[in-house]
Length: 313
Image 1 (cartoon, rainbow, N blue to C red):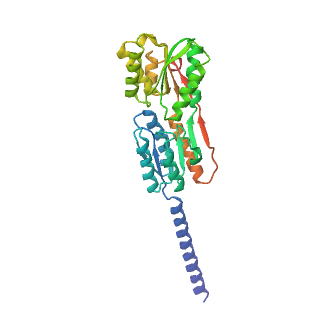
Image 2 (image 1 turned 60 degrees about the vertical axis):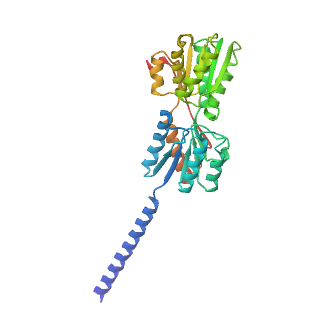
Image 3 (image 1 turned 30 degrees about the horizontal axis):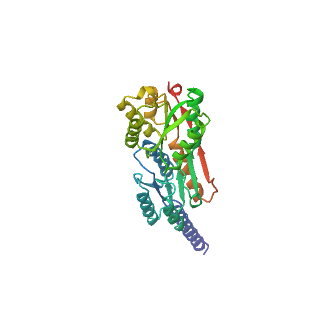
Protein backbone atom coordinates (compact mmCIF):
# COMPACT_ATOMS: atom_id res chain seq x y z
CA UNK A 1 0.00 0.00 0.00
CA UNK A 2 2.80 2.35 0.91
CA UNK A 3 4.43 1.55 -2.41
CA UNK A 4 1.23 2.43 -4.31
CA UNK A 5 0.82 5.70 -2.38
CA UNK A 6 4.44 6.57 -3.11
CA UNK A 7 3.93 5.97 -6.81
CA UNK A 8 0.74 8.07 -6.83
CA UNK A 9 2.54 10.89 -5.05
CA UNK A 10 5.33 10.78 -7.61
CA UNK A 11 2.83 10.88 -10.50
CA UNK A 12 1.06 13.91 -8.95
CA UNK A 13 4.40 15.72 -8.51
CA UNK A 14 5.37 15.01 -12.12
CA UNK A 15 1.98 16.26 -13.42
CA UNK A 16 2.17 19.42 -11.33
CA UNK A 17 5.73 20.06 -12.49
CA UNK A 18 4.81 19.63 -16.16
CA UNK A 19 1.77 21.90 -15.72
CA UNK A 20 3.88 24.54 -14.00
CA UNK A 21 6.57 24.38 -16.67
CA UNK A 22 3.93 24.69 -19.36
CA UNK A 23 2.56 27.78 -17.64
CA UNK A 24 6.03 29.31 -17.40
CA UNK A 25 6.71 28.60 -21.05
CA UNK A 26 3.42 30.21 -22.05
CA UNK A 27 4.23 33.23 -19.86
CA UNK A 28 7.65 33.54 -21.47
CA UNK A 29 6.09 33.29 -24.91
CA UNK A 30 3.76 36.11 -23.98
CA UNK A 31 6.63 38.21 -22.66
CA UNK A 32 8.59 37.62 -25.84
CA UNK A 33 5.72 38.60 -28.11
CA UNK A 34 7.32 40.60 -30.92
CA UNK A 35 6.56 44.31 -31.12
CA UNK A 36 6.35 46.22 -34.38
CA UNK A 37 7.24 49.90 -34.67
CA UNK A 38 6.74 52.26 -37.58
CA UNK A 39 9.12 55.06 -38.58
CA UNK A 40 8.75 57.80 -41.18
CA UNK A 41 11.26 60.59 -41.77
CA UNK A 42 10.69 63.64 -43.98
CA UNK A 43 13.07 62.16 -46.57
CA UNK A 44 15.56 59.31 -46.85
CA UNK A 45 17.36 61.24 -49.61
CA UNK A 46 19.78 62.49 -46.97
CA UNK A 47 22.46 60.39 -45.20
CA UNK A 48 21.51 62.11 -41.94
CA UNK A 49 18.09 60.42 -41.85
CA UNK A 50 19.62 57.08 -42.82
CA UNK A 51 21.87 57.38 -39.73
CA UNK A 52 18.83 58.29 -37.64
CA UNK A 53 17.17 55.07 -38.81
CA UNK A 54 20.27 53.02 -37.97
CA UNK A 55 20.17 54.35 -34.39
CA UNK A 56 16.51 53.38 -34.04
CA UNK A 57 16.86 50.00 -35.68
CA UNK A 58 19.82 48.97 -33.53
CA UNK A 59 17.89 49.29 -30.27
CA UNK A 60 14.67 47.78 -31.64
CA UNK A 61 16.35 44.73 -33.16
CA UNK A 62 18.40 44.19 -29.98
CA UNK A 63 15.05 43.80 -28.24
CA UNK A 64 13.97 41.20 -30.80
CA UNK A 65 11.40 43.55 -32.32
CA UNK A 66 10.66 44.87 -35.83
CA UNK A 67 10.97 48.34 -37.41
CA UNK A 68 9.05 49.35 -40.55
CA UNK A 69 10.49 52.46 -42.27
CA UNK A 70 8.66 54.51 -44.93
CA UNK A 71 9.84 57.53 -46.97
CA UNK A 72 7.28 60.27 -47.79
CA UNK A 73 9.82 62.18 -49.93
CA UNK A 74 9.08 65.55 -48.25
CA UNK A 75 5.35 65.21 -48.98
CA UNK A 76 3.32 65.75 -45.79
CA UNK A 77 0.13 64.32 -47.38
CA UNK A 78 2.00 61.16 -48.26
CA UNK A 79 3.42 61.05 -44.74
CA UNK A 80 -0.07 61.31 -43.25
CA UNK A 81 -1.17 58.35 -45.44
CA UNK A 82 1.88 56.37 -44.27
CA UNK A 83 0.97 56.99 -40.62
CA UNK A 84 -2.67 56.00 -41.28
CA UNK A 85 -1.36 52.77 -42.80
CA UNK A 86 0.75 52.12 -39.70
CA UNK A 87 -2.25 52.78 -37.46
CA UNK A 88 -4.28 50.23 -39.47
CA UNK A 89 -1.44 47.73 -39.01
CA UNK A 90 -1.76 48.34 -35.24
CA UNK A 91 1.92 49.06 -34.68
CA UNK A 92 3.09 49.39 -31.08
CA UNK A 93 4.54 52.87 -31.62
CA UNK A 94 5.43 55.39 -34.33
CA UNK A 95 8.69 57.29 -34.70
CA UNK A 96 8.11 60.47 -36.67
CA UNK A 97 10.29 63.11 -38.28
CA UNK A 98 7.59 65.39 -39.74
CA UNK A 99 7.73 66.70 -43.29
CA UNK A 100 5.67 69.67 -42.05
CA UNK A 101 5.66 70.42 -38.34
CA UNK A 102 2.14 71.96 -38.43
CA UNK A 103 0.31 70.13 -41.24
CA UNK A 104 1.09 66.70 -39.77
CA UNK A 105 -1.56 67.28 -37.06
CA UNK A 106 -4.37 65.05 -38.54
CA UNK A 107 -2.06 62.02 -38.42
CA UNK A 108 -1.13 62.74 -34.80
CA UNK A 109 -4.80 63.01 -33.85
CA UNK A 110 -5.58 59.64 -35.47
CA UNK A 111 -2.69 57.96 -33.69
CA UNK A 112 -3.83 59.45 -30.37
CA UNK A 113 -7.37 58.17 -30.96
CA UNK A 114 -5.99 54.69 -31.72
CA UNK A 115 -3.88 54.79 -28.51
CA UNK A 116 -0.66 54.41 -30.49
CA UNK A 117 2.18 56.46 -28.96
CA UNK A 118 4.12 58.80 -31.24
CA UNK A 119 7.77 59.69 -30.61
CA UNK A 120 9.21 62.68 -32.46
CA UNK A 121 12.79 62.73 -33.76
CA UNK A 122 15.08 65.53 -34.95
CA UNK A 123 12.45 68.24 -35.42
CA UNK A 124 9.45 69.21 -33.27
CA UNK A 125 5.75 69.22 -34.10
CA UNK A 126 3.49 72.18 -33.33
CA UNK A 127 0.97 70.07 -31.37
CA UNK A 128 3.26 68.61 -28.72
CA UNK A 129 0.28 67.51 -26.59
CA UNK A 130 -0.41 64.80 -29.19
CA UNK A 131 3.00 63.12 -28.85
CA UNK A 132 4.84 61.35 -26.04
CA UNK A 133 8.26 62.95 -26.38
CA UNK A 134 10.51 64.90 -28.75
CA UNK A 135 14.19 63.99 -29.16
CA UNK A 136 16.10 66.70 -31.02
CA UNK A 137 19.49 68.31 -31.45
CA UNK A 138 20.01 71.66 -29.78
CA UNK A 139 19.09 73.37 -33.04
CA UNK A 140 18.99 76.86 -31.59
CA UNK A 141 22.58 76.51 -30.44
CA UNK A 142 23.61 75.22 -33.88
CA UNK A 143 22.65 78.58 -35.40
CA UNK A 144 24.28 80.53 -32.56
CA UNK A 145 27.57 78.62 -32.92
CA UNK A 146 27.72 79.40 -36.66
CA UNK A 147 26.92 83.09 -36.13
CA UNK A 148 29.48 83.50 -33.35
CA UNK A 149 32.15 81.80 -35.42
CA UNK A 150 31.43 84.30 -38.20
CA UNK A 151 31.57 87.39 -35.98
CA UNK A 152 33.97 86.39 -33.18
CA UNK A 153 36.44 84.03 -34.85
CA UNK A 154 36.45 85.28 -38.44
CA UNK A 155 35.75 88.84 -37.23
CA UNK A 156 33.26 89.42 -40.06
CA UNK A 157 30.90 92.10 -38.76
CA UNK A 158 29.88 93.77 -42.01
CA UNK A 159 28.78 92.56 -45.42
CA UNK A 160 25.93 90.78 -47.20
CA UNK A 161 24.47 87.55 -45.83
CA UNK A 162 22.38 84.87 -47.59
CA UNK A 163 20.13 82.51 -45.60
CA UNK A 164 18.82 79.25 -47.05
CA UNK A 165 16.00 77.92 -44.89
CA UNK A 166 13.32 75.22 -44.66
CA UNK A 167 10.22 76.90 -43.14
CA UNK A 168 8.15 73.71 -42.75
CA UNK A 169 10.73 72.07 -40.44
CA UNK A 170 10.90 73.42 -36.90
CA UNK A 171 14.54 72.31 -36.51
CA UNK A 172 15.55 74.40 -39.54
CA UNK A 173 13.51 77.36 -38.32
CA UNK A 174 15.32 77.28 -34.98
CA UNK A 175 18.75 77.15 -36.64
CA UNK A 176 18.19 80.00 -39.07
CA UNK A 177 16.27 82.17 -36.58
CA UNK A 178 18.98 81.88 -33.92
CA UNK A 179 21.66 82.69 -36.52
CA UNK A 180 19.70 85.76 -37.63
CA UNK A 181 19.07 86.94 -34.06
CA UNK A 182 22.77 86.63 -33.29
CA UNK A 183 23.98 88.63 -36.30
CA UNK A 184 21.39 91.36 -35.60
CA UNK A 185 23.88 92.55 -32.99
CA UNK A 186 25.95 93.83 -35.91
CA UNK A 187 23.99 96.43 -37.92
CA UNK A 188 26.48 96.32 -40.82
CA UNK A 189 25.65 92.67 -41.53
CA UNK A 190 22.79 92.79 -44.02
CA UNK A 191 20.60 89.84 -45.08
CA UNK A 192 20.07 90.29 -48.82
CA UNK A 193 18.27 86.99 -49.49
CA UNK A 194 16.33 84.43 -47.44
CA UNK A 195 14.97 81.53 -49.49
CA UNK A 196 13.70 78.00 -48.93
CA UNK A 197 15.67 75.00 -50.21
CA UNK A 198 13.78 72.14 -48.49
CA UNK A 199 17.19 70.97 -47.27
CA UNK A 200 17.95 69.41 -50.69
CA UNK A 201 21.15 69.70 -52.76
CA UNK A 202 19.49 70.17 -56.17
CA UNK A 203 16.97 72.73 -54.94
CA UNK A 204 19.54 74.76 -53.03
CA UNK A 205 21.86 74.84 -56.06
CA UNK A 206 19.10 76.29 -58.27
CA UNK A 207 17.98 78.75 -55.56
CA UNK A 208 21.56 79.92 -54.99
CA UNK A 209 22.11 80.41 -58.71
CA UNK A 210 18.98 82.59 -58.84
CA UNK A 211 20.22 84.61 -55.86
CA UNK A 212 23.61 85.13 -57.52
CA UNK A 213 21.92 86.29 -60.73
CA UNK A 214 19.71 88.72 -58.76
CA UNK A 215 22.71 90.15 -56.89
CA UNK A 216 25.34 90.36 -59.61
CA UNK A 217 26.66 93.66 -58.36
CA UNK A 218 26.64 92.80 -54.65
CA UNK A 219 29.37 90.78 -53.00
CA UNK A 220 28.21 88.07 -50.62
CA UNK A 221 30.23 87.72 -47.41
CA UNK A 222 28.62 84.67 -45.80
CA UNK A 223 25.95 82.02 -46.34
CA UNK A 224 24.04 80.17 -43.62
CA UNK A 225 22.60 76.89 -44.90
CA UNK A 226 20.07 75.04 -42.76
CA UNK A 227 21.87 71.70 -43.29
CA UNK A 228 24.89 70.16 -45.01
CA UNK A 229 23.12 69.11 -48.26
CA UNK A 230 21.97 72.73 -48.68
CA UNK A 231 25.55 73.93 -48.20
CA UNK A 232 26.70 71.44 -50.88
CA UNK A 233 24.19 72.92 -53.34
CA UNK A 234 25.38 76.43 -52.45
CA UNK A 235 29.01 75.50 -53.13
CA UNK A 236 28.09 73.91 -56.48
CA UNK A 237 26.23 77.09 -57.52
CA UNK A 238 29.10 79.37 -56.47
CA UNK A 239 31.60 77.28 -58.41
CA UNK A 240 29.35 77.18 -61.45
CA UNK A 241 28.96 80.96 -61.40
CA UNK A 242 32.64 81.58 -60.66
CA UNK A 243 31.94 83.43 -57.41
CA UNK A 244 33.40 81.06 -54.85
CA UNK A 245 36.31 83.34 -53.90
CA UNK A 246 34.17 86.30 -52.87
CA UNK A 247 32.32 84.35 -50.12
CA UNK A 248 34.28 84.35 -46.86
CA UNK A 249 32.16 81.84 -44.94
CA UNK A 250 29.72 78.99 -45.69
CA UNK A 251 28.00 77.18 -42.81
CA UNK A 252 25.99 73.97 -42.68
CA UNK A 253 24.42 71.81 -40.00
CA UNK A 254 24.72 68.00 -39.65
CA UNK A 255 28.39 67.07 -39.37
CA UNK A 256 28.33 64.72 -42.36
CA UNK A 257 31.47 63.08 -43.75
CA UNK A 258 31.05 65.01 -47.02
CA UNK A 259 30.99 68.26 -45.06
CA UNK A 260 34.26 67.30 -43.38
CA UNK A 261 35.82 66.74 -46.82
CA UNK A 262 34.66 70.14 -48.07
CA UNK A 263 35.94 71.84 -44.92
CA UNK A 264 39.31 70.12 -45.40
CA UNK A 265 39.31 71.32 -49.03
CA UNK A 266 38.69 74.91 -47.91
CA UNK A 267 35.29 75.16 -49.62
CA UNK A 268 33.11 75.06 -46.51
CA UNK A 269 33.83 76.96 -43.28
CA UNK A 270 32.11 74.84 -40.64
CA UNK A 271 29.25 72.50 -39.82
CA UNK A 272 27.34 72.28 -36.56
CA UNK A 273 27.60 68.54 -35.99
CA UNK A 274 24.56 66.59 -34.90
CA UNK A 275 24.51 62.99 -33.73
CA UNK A 276 21.64 61.25 -35.57
CA UNK A 277 22.47 57.72 -34.42
CA UNK A 278 22.40 58.92 -30.82
CA UNK A 279 19.05 60.68 -31.38
CA UNK A 280 17.61 57.46 -32.86
CA UNK A 281 19.01 55.39 -30.00
CA UNK A 282 17.62 57.74 -27.31
CA UNK A 283 14.19 57.85 -29.01
CA UNK A 284 13.98 54.04 -29.19
CA UNK A 285 15.11 53.63 -25.57
CA UNK A 286 12.54 56.25 -24.50
CA UNK A 287 9.81 54.34 -26.35
CA UNK A 288 10.59 51.13 -24.48
CA UNK A 289 10.60 52.98 -21.16
CA UNK A 290 7.22 54.54 -21.95
CA UNK A 291 5.68 51.23 -23.04
CA UNK A 292 6.91 49.58 -19.83
CA UNK A 293 5.17 52.29 -17.77
CA UNK A 294 8.10 54.55 -16.91
CA UNK A 295 7.81 58.33 -17.02
CA UNK A 296 9.95 60.04 -19.65
CA UNK A 297 10.79 63.68 -20.42
CA UNK A 298 8.57 65.56 -22.86
CA UNK A 299 11.67 66.88 -24.63
CA UNK A 300 15.24 65.60 -24.82
CA UNK A 301 17.92 67.84 -26.37
CA UNK A 302 21.14 66.36 -27.72
CA UNK A 303 24.13 68.79 -27.77
CA UNK A 304 25.75 69.91 -31.03
CA UNK A 305 29.37 70.81 -31.76
CA UNK A 306 30.80 73.23 -34.32
CA UNK A 307 33.33 71.46 -36.55
CA UNK A 308 35.93 73.63 -38.29
CA UNK A 309 39.20 72.94 -40.09
CA UNK A 310 40.99 72.86 -36.73
CA UNK A 311 38.87 69.88 -35.66
CA UNK A 312 39.58 67.71 -38.69
CA UNK A 313 43.29 68.34 -39.26
